[in-house]
Length: 194
Length: 194
Image (cartoon, rainbow over all chains, first blue to last red; front, side):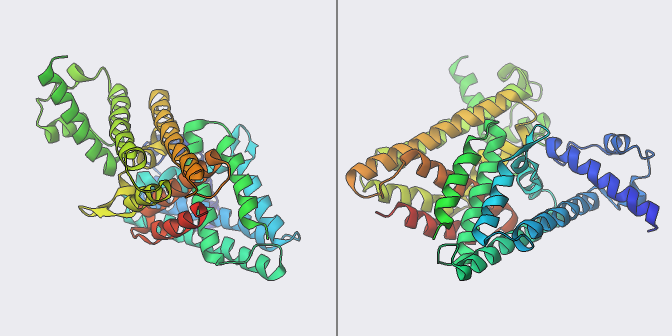
Protein backbone atom coordinates (compact mmCIF):
# COMPACT_ATOMS: atom_id res chain seq x y z
CA UNK A 1 0.00 0.00 0.00
CA UNK A 2 1.47 3.39 -0.98
CA UNK A 3 1.71 6.30 1.42
CA UNK A 4 -1.47 8.06 0.29
CA UNK A 5 -3.47 4.80 0.53
CA UNK A 6 -2.07 4.18 3.98
CA UNK A 7 -3.05 7.69 5.12
CA UNK A 8 -6.58 7.17 3.75
CA UNK A 9 -6.83 3.78 5.49
CA UNK A 10 -5.78 5.39 8.80
CA UNK A 11 -8.32 8.16 8.24
CA UNK A 12 -11.12 5.61 7.65
CA UNK A 13 -10.11 3.82 10.87
CA UNK A 14 -10.12 7.10 12.83
CA UNK A 15 -13.63 7.96 11.56
CA UNK A 16 -14.72 4.34 12.14
CA UNK A 17 -13.52 4.55 15.72
CA UNK A 18 -15.55 7.72 16.34
CA UNK A 19 -18.67 6.10 14.84
CA UNK A 20 -18.17 2.80 16.71
CA UNK A 21 -17.92 4.65 20.04
CA UNK A 22 -21.59 5.57 19.87
CA UNK A 23 -23.07 3.11 17.38
CA UNK A 24 -21.14 -0.07 18.19
CA UNK A 25 -20.07 -2.30 15.29
CA UNK A 26 -23.17 -3.74 13.62
CA UNK A 27 -24.89 -0.37 13.29
CA UNK A 28 -21.96 1.32 11.52
CA UNK A 29 -22.91 1.17 7.84
CA UNK A 30 -20.20 1.25 5.18
CA UNK A 31 -21.98 4.02 3.24
CA UNK A 32 -22.13 6.21 6.36
CA UNK A 33 -18.52 5.41 7.23
CA UNK A 34 -17.16 6.37 3.81
CA UNK A 35 -19.36 9.46 3.57
CA UNK A 36 -18.17 10.61 7.03
CA UNK A 37 -14.56 9.91 6.02
CA UNK A 38 -15.11 11.73 2.70
CA UNK A 39 -13.79 8.73 0.77
CA UNK A 40 -15.44 7.66 -2.54
CA UNK A 41 -18.27 5.20 -1.99
CA UNK A 42 -17.33 1.75 -3.16
CA UNK A 43 -13.63 2.03 -2.30
CA UNK A 44 -14.04 0.26 1.08
CA UNK A 45 -12.91 -3.13 -0.26
CA UNK A 46 -9.72 -1.58 -1.61
CA UNK A 47 -8.71 -1.00 2.02
CA UNK A 48 -10.40 -3.89 3.84
CA UNK A 49 -11.25 -7.40 2.61
CA UNK A 50 -14.52 -7.48 4.57
CA UNK A 51 -16.40 -5.62 7.29
CA UNK A 52 -15.02 -8.12 9.79
CA UNK A 53 -11.44 -7.39 8.63
CA UNK A 54 -12.25 -3.70 9.07
CA UNK A 55 -13.46 -4.45 12.62
CA UNK A 56 -10.24 -6.31 13.40
CA UNK A 57 -8.15 -3.45 11.97
CA UNK A 58 -10.23 -0.97 14.00
CA UNK A 59 -9.43 -2.81 17.24
CA UNK A 60 -5.71 -3.04 16.36
CA UNK A 61 -5.67 0.67 15.49
CA UNK A 62 -7.35 1.51 18.79
CA UNK A 63 -4.93 -0.57 20.89
CA UNK A 64 -1.87 0.72 19.05
CA UNK A 65 -2.73 4.23 20.17
CA UNK A 66 -4.02 3.22 23.60
CA UNK A 67 -0.91 1.19 24.46
CA UNK A 68 1.24 4.13 23.36
CA UNK A 69 -0.72 6.34 25.79
CA UNK A 70 -0.22 3.76 28.57
CA UNK A 71 3.50 3.54 27.75
CA UNK A 72 3.81 7.33 28.01
CA UNK A 73 1.91 7.46 31.31
CA UNK A 74 3.27 4.35 33.04
CA UNK A 75 6.78 3.78 31.60
CA UNK A 76 8.36 7.00 30.35
CA UNK A 77 6.84 9.36 32.97
CA UNK A 78 9.03 10.54 35.88
CA UNK A 79 6.65 10.38 38.89
CA UNK A 80 6.70 7.47 41.37
CA UNK A 81 5.03 4.34 39.99
CA UNK A 82 2.17 4.85 42.44
CA UNK A 83 1.61 8.37 41.11
CA UNK A 84 1.84 7.20 37.49
CA UNK A 85 -0.98 4.71 38.06
CA UNK A 86 -3.07 7.34 39.84
CA UNK A 87 -2.46 9.75 36.94
CA UNK A 88 -3.56 7.06 34.48
CA UNK A 89 -6.77 6.22 36.31
CA UNK A 90 -7.49 9.93 36.92
CA UNK A 91 -7.14 10.43 33.16
CA UNK A 92 -9.93 7.85 32.66
CA UNK A 93 -12.29 9.93 34.82
CA UNK A 94 -11.59 13.15 32.92
CA UNK A 95 -14.08 14.62 30.47
CA UNK A 96 -12.80 15.90 27.11
CA UNK A 97 -15.18 17.33 24.48
CA UNK A 98 -18.22 16.19 26.47
CA UNK A 99 -17.16 12.54 26.84
CA UNK A 100 -15.11 11.01 29.64
CA UNK A 101 -12.05 9.02 28.63
CA UNK A 102 -13.39 5.82 30.24
CA UNK A 103 -16.23 6.09 27.75
CA UNK A 104 -13.80 6.11 24.82
CA UNK A 105 -12.80 2.51 25.57
CA UNK A 106 -13.50 0.21 22.62
CA UNK A 107 -13.25 -2.91 24.83
CA UNK A 108 -16.17 -1.64 26.92
CA UNK A 109 -18.16 -0.61 23.85
CA UNK A 110 -17.60 -3.65 21.63
CA UNK A 111 -16.79 -6.75 23.73
CA UNK A 112 -20.34 -7.87 24.51
CA UNK A 113 -21.54 -7.02 21.02
CA UNK A 114 -18.85 -8.66 18.91
CA UNK A 115 -17.50 -11.56 21.03
CA UNK A 116 -20.36 -13.81 19.87
CA UNK A 117 -20.27 -12.39 16.33
CA UNK A 118 -16.63 -12.54 15.21
CA UNK A 119 -13.86 -14.80 16.47
CA UNK A 120 -11.21 -12.55 14.88
CA UNK A 121 -12.53 -9.45 16.67
CA UNK A 122 -12.86 -11.32 19.96
CA UNK A 123 -9.20 -12.38 19.75
CA UNK A 124 -8.04 -8.87 18.81
CA UNK A 125 -9.88 -7.44 21.84
CA UNK A 126 -8.47 -10.15 24.09
CA UNK A 127 -4.90 -9.67 22.87
CA UNK A 128 -5.06 -5.91 23.47
CA UNK A 129 -6.61 -6.44 26.90
CA UNK A 130 -3.79 -8.84 27.85
CA UNK A 131 -1.25 -6.14 27.02
CA UNK A 132 -3.08 -3.49 29.07
CA UNK A 133 -3.24 -5.77 32.13
CA UNK A 134 0.46 -6.67 31.72
CA UNK A 135 1.45 -3.00 31.52
CA UNK A 136 -0.45 -2.27 34.75
CA UNK A 137 1.08 -5.35 36.45
CA UNK A 138 4.61 -4.29 35.41
CA UNK A 139 4.02 -0.80 36.80
CA UNK A 140 2.71 -2.25 40.08
CA UNK A 141 5.73 -4.60 40.38
CA UNK A 142 8.12 -1.68 39.76
CA UNK A 143 6.26 0.40 42.37
CA UNK A 144 6.51 -2.44 44.88
CA UNK A 145 10.29 -2.60 44.35
CA UNK A 146 10.41 1.18 44.74
CA UNK A 147 8.27 1.00 47.90
CA UNK A 148 5.57 3.35 46.53
CA UNK A 149 2.97 0.56 46.09
CA UNK A 150 1.67 -2.02 48.59
CA UNK A 151 3.32 -5.47 48.47
CA UNK A 152 1.38 -8.45 47.09
CA UNK A 153 0.68 -10.39 43.89
CA UNK A 154 1.19 -7.69 41.23
CA UNK A 155 -0.66 -9.64 38.54
CA UNK A 156 -3.73 -10.21 40.74
CA UNK A 157 -3.78 -6.57 41.81
CA UNK A 158 -3.53 -5.47 38.16
CA UNK A 159 -6.45 -7.71 37.27
CA UNK A 160 -8.40 -6.40 40.27
CA UNK A 161 -7.91 -2.79 39.14
CA UNK A 162 -8.62 -3.63 35.52
CA UNK A 163 -11.92 -5.44 36.28
CA UNK A 164 -12.89 -2.56 38.57
CA UNK A 165 -12.37 0.06 35.87
CA UNK A 166 -13.90 -1.95 33.03
CA UNK A 167 -16.99 -2.51 35.19
CA UNK A 168 -17.35 1.15 36.18
CA UNK A 169 -16.75 2.26 32.59
CA UNK A 170 -19.55 0.02 31.34
CA UNK A 171 -21.93 1.28 34.05
CA UNK A 172 -20.93 4.86 33.21
CA UNK A 173 -22.94 4.36 30.02
CA UNK A 174 -26.05 3.75 32.16
CA UNK A 175 -25.46 6.43 34.80
CA UNK A 176 -24.07 9.23 32.60
CA UNK A 177 -22.31 10.76 35.61
CA UNK A 178 -18.82 10.52 37.06
CA UNK A 179 -19.77 9.19 40.52
CA UNK A 180 -18.84 5.54 39.90
CA UNK A 181 -15.51 6.52 38.35
CA UNK A 182 -14.75 8.92 41.22
CA UNK A 183 -15.49 6.14 43.72
CA UNK A 184 -13.16 3.87 41.73
CA UNK A 185 -10.39 6.42 42.13
CA UNK A 186 -10.83 6.40 45.93
CA UNK A 187 -10.83 2.58 45.95
CA UNK A 188 -7.75 2.46 43.68
CA UNK A 189 -5.77 4.74 46.01
CA UNK A 190 -6.65 2.53 48.99
CA UNK A 191 -5.64 -0.63 47.11
CA UNK A 192 -2.29 0.75 45.93
CA UNK A 193 -1.11 2.67 49.00
CA UNK A 194 1.66 0.85 50.94
CA UNK B 1 -54.59 -8.68 29.25
CA UNK B 2 -56.18 -12.07 29.94
CA UNK B 3 -54.31 -14.98 31.49
CA UNK B 4 -53.47 -16.74 28.23
CA UNK B 5 -52.18 -13.51 26.69
CA UNK B 6 -50.08 -12.85 29.76
CA UNK B 7 -48.57 -16.35 29.60
CA UNK B 8 -47.74 -15.86 25.91
CA UNK B 9 -46.18 -12.47 26.65
CA UNK B 10 -43.99 -14.02 29.36
CA UNK B 11 -43.04 -16.80 26.96
CA UNK B 12 -41.98 -14.29 24.29
CA UNK B 13 -39.89 -12.47 26.90
CA UNK B 14 -38.22 -15.72 28.00
CA UNK B 15 -37.32 -16.61 24.39
CA UNK B 16 -36.26 -13.00 23.76
CA UNK B 17 -33.95 -13.17 26.77
CA UNK B 18 -32.28 -16.33 25.43
CA UNK B 19 -31.80 -14.75 22.00
CA UNK B 20 -30.55 -11.43 23.41
CA UNK B 21 -27.91 -13.24 25.50
CA UNK B 22 -26.01 -14.19 22.36
CA UNK B 23 -27.26 -11.77 19.71
CA UNK B 24 -27.68 -8.57 21.72
CA UNK B 25 -30.69 -6.35 21.01
CA UNK B 26 -30.38 -4.93 17.48
CA UNK B 27 -29.67 -8.31 15.88
CA UNK B 28 -32.77 -10.00 17.38
CA UNK B 29 -35.31 -9.87 14.54
CA UNK B 30 -39.03 -9.98 15.32
CA UNK B 31 -39.63 -12.78 12.80
CA UNK B 32 -36.95 -14.94 14.39
CA UNK B 33 -38.23 -14.12 17.88
CA UNK B 34 -41.83 -15.11 17.13
CA UNK B 35 -40.79 -18.20 15.19
CA UNK B 36 -38.57 -19.33 18.10
CA UNK B 37 -41.42 -18.63 20.54
CA UNK B 38 -43.87 -20.46 18.26
CA UNK B 39 -46.22 -17.48 18.27
CA UNK B 40 -48.06 -16.43 15.06
CA UNK B 41 -46.05 -13.99 12.99
CA UNK B 42 -47.58 -10.54 13.08
CA UNK B 43 -48.89 -10.81 16.64
CA UNK B 44 -45.87 -9.01 18.15
CA UNK B 45 -47.63 -5.64 18.32
CA UNK B 46 -50.49 -7.17 20.25
CA UNK B 47 -48.05 -7.72 23.11
CA UNK B 48 -45.60 -4.83 22.70
CA UNK B 49 -46.19 -1.34 21.28
CA UNK B 50 -42.72 -1.25 19.64
CA UNK B 51 -39.41 -3.08 19.59
CA UNK B 52 -38.11 -0.54 22.11
CA UNK B 53 -41.05 -1.28 24.44
CA UNK B 54 -40.24 -4.97 24.05
CA UNK B 55 -36.61 -4.19 25.01
CA UNK B 56 -37.75 -2.31 28.09
CA UNK B 57 -40.08 -5.19 29.07
CA UNK B 58 -37.23 -7.65 28.49
CA UNK B 59 -34.98 -5.79 30.93
CA UNK B 60 -37.79 -5.54 33.53
CA UNK B 61 -38.53 -9.27 33.13
CA UNK B 62 -34.83 -10.08 33.57
CA UNK B 63 -34.44 -7.97 36.72
CA UNK B 64 -37.66 -9.25 38.27
CA UNK B 65 -36.23 -12.77 38.22
CA UNK B 66 -32.67 -11.72 39.03
CA UNK B 67 -33.70 -9.67 42.05
CA UNK B 68 -35.80 -12.61 43.27
CA UNK B 69 -32.68 -14.80 43.02
CA UNK B 70 -30.65 -12.19 44.93
CA UNK B 71 -33.38 -11.96 47.57
CA UNK B 72 -33.33 -15.75 48.01
CA UNK B 73 -29.54 -15.88 48.25
CA UNK B 74 -28.87 -12.75 50.32
CA UNK B 75 -32.02 -12.18 52.42
CA UNK B 76 -33.93 -15.39 53.09
CA UNK B 77 -30.88 -17.74 53.29
CA UNK B 78 -29.67 -18.86 56.72
CA UNK B 79 -25.84 -18.70 56.42
CA UNK B 80 -23.82 -15.80 57.81
CA UNK B 81 -24.06 -12.68 55.64
CA UNK B 82 -20.43 -13.20 54.63
CA UNK B 83 -21.22 -16.72 53.44
CA UNK B 84 -24.37 -15.58 51.62
CA UNK B 85 -22.32 -13.10 49.56
CA UNK B 86 -19.67 -15.73 48.85
CA UNK B 87 -22.41 -18.14 47.75
CA UNK B 88 -23.87 -15.48 45.46
CA UNK B 89 -20.54 -14.65 43.81
CA UNK B 90 -19.63 -18.34 43.57
CA UNK B 91 -22.95 -18.87 41.79
CA UNK B 92 -21.84 -16.30 39.16
CA UNK B 93 -18.72 -18.38 38.42
CA UNK B 94 -20.67 -21.61 37.98
CA UNK B 95 -21.32 -23.10 34.55
CA UNK B 96 -24.82 -24.40 33.78
CA UNK B 97 -25.68 -25.86 30.35
CA UNK B 98 -22.36 -24.73 28.91
CA UNK B 99 -22.63 -21.08 29.96
CA UNK B 100 -21.45 -19.51 33.21
CA UNK B 101 -24.01 -17.52 35.17
CA UNK B 102 -21.94 -14.32 34.92
CA UNK B 103 -22.42 -14.63 31.18
CA UNK B 104 -26.21 -14.65 31.58
CA UNK B 105 -26.17 -11.04 32.78
CA UNK B 106 -28.23 -8.77 30.55
CA UNK B 107 -26.55 -5.64 31.96
CA UNK B 108 -23.19 -6.90 30.70
CA UNK B 109 -24.64 -7.97 27.36
CA UNK B 110 -26.81 -4.94 26.57
CA UNK B 111 -25.52 -1.84 28.38
CA UNK B 112 -22.91 -0.72 25.84
CA UNK B 113 -25.14 -1.60 22.92
CA UNK B 114 -28.40 0.04 23.96
CA UNK B 115 -27.39 2.95 26.23
CA UNK B 116 -26.80 5.17 23.19
CA UNK B 117 -29.78 3.74 21.33
CA UNK B 118 -32.72 3.90 23.74
CA UNK B 119 -33.21 6.19 26.71
CA UNK B 120 -36.00 3.93 28.07
CA UNK B 121 -33.78 0.84 27.98
CA UNK B 122 -30.86 2.73 29.53
CA UNK B 123 -33.07 3.83 32.43
CA UNK B 124 -34.47 0.31 32.91
CA UNK B 125 -30.92 -1.11 33.07
CA UNK B 126 -29.85 1.63 35.46
CA UNK B 127 -32.84 1.17 37.76
CA UNK B 128 -32.24 -2.59 38.01
CA UNK B 129 -28.52 -2.05 38.61
CA UNK B 130 -29.31 0.38 41.45
CA UNK B 131 -31.39 -2.31 43.14
CA UNK B 132 -28.67 -4.96 42.78
CA UNK B 133 -26.04 -2.65 44.33
CA UNK B 134 -28.44 -1.74 47.16
CA UNK B 135 -29.15 -5.42 47.91
CA UNK B 136 -25.39 -6.14 48.12
CA UNK B 137 -24.84 -3.04 50.30
CA UNK B 138 -27.66 -4.09 52.67
CA UNK B 139 -26.16 -7.57 53.00
CA UNK B 140 -22.71 -6.09 53.70
CA UNK B 141 -24.15 -3.74 56.36
CA UNK B 142 -25.98 -6.66 58.03
CA UNK B 143 -22.76 -8.72 57.95
CA UNK B 144 -20.82 -5.88 59.52
CA UNK B 145 -23.36 -5.70 62.37
CA UNK B 146 -23.10 -9.46 62.71
CA UNK B 147 -19.29 -9.29 62.68
CA UNK B 148 -18.91 -11.64 59.69
CA UNK B 149 -17.85 -8.87 57.26
CA UNK B 150 -15.06 -6.29 57.55
CA UNK B 151 -16.09 -2.83 58.84
CA UNK B 152 -16.16 0.11 56.41
CA UNK B 153 -18.44 2.05 54.07
CA UNK B 154 -20.93 -0.66 53.03
CA UNK B 155 -22.15 1.25 49.99
CA UNK B 156 -18.62 1.84 48.66
CA UNK B 157 -17.69 -1.80 49.23
CA UNK B 158 -20.87 -2.94 47.42
CA UNK B 159 -20.00 -0.70 44.48
CA UNK B 160 -16.41 -1.99 44.54
CA UNK B 161 -17.61 -5.62 44.34
CA UNK B 162 -20.23 -4.81 41.72
CA UNK B 163 -17.77 -3.01 39.40
CA UNK B 164 -15.32 -5.89 39.89
CA UNK B 165 -17.85 -8.53 38.84
CA UNK B 166 -19.37 -6.54 35.98
CA UNK B 167 -15.85 -5.97 34.61
CA UNK B 168 -14.81 -9.63 34.88
CA UNK B 169 -18.14 -10.76 33.39
CA UNK B 170 -17.62 -8.54 30.36
CA UNK B 171 -14.05 -9.80 29.89
CA UNK B 172 -15.29 -13.39 30.28
CA UNK B 173 -16.82 -12.91 26.83
CA UNK B 174 -13.33 -12.30 25.43
CA UNK B 175 -11.44 -14.96 27.40
CA UNK B 176 -14.02 -17.78 27.35
CA UNK B 177 -12.50 -19.25 30.50
CA UNK B 178 -13.22 -18.96 34.22
CA UNK B 179 -9.83 -17.63 35.35
CA UNK B 180 -10.89 -13.99 35.74
CA UNK B 181 -14.02 -14.96 37.66
CA UNK B 182 -12.04 -17.34 39.90
CA UNK B 183 -9.56 -14.54 40.66
CA UNK B 184 -12.51 -12.28 41.46
CA UNK B 185 -13.69 -14.81 44.02
CA UNK B 186 -10.30 -14.75 45.76
CA UNK B 187 -10.30 -10.93 45.73
CA UNK B 188 -13.90 -10.83 47.03
CA UNK B 189 -13.05 -13.07 50.00
CA UNK B 190 -10.09 -10.86 50.89
CA UNK B 191 -12.22 -7.71 50.67
CA UNK B 192 -15.07 -9.09 52.81
CA UNK B 193 -13.16 -10.98 55.52
CA UNK B 194 -13.09 -9.13 58.86
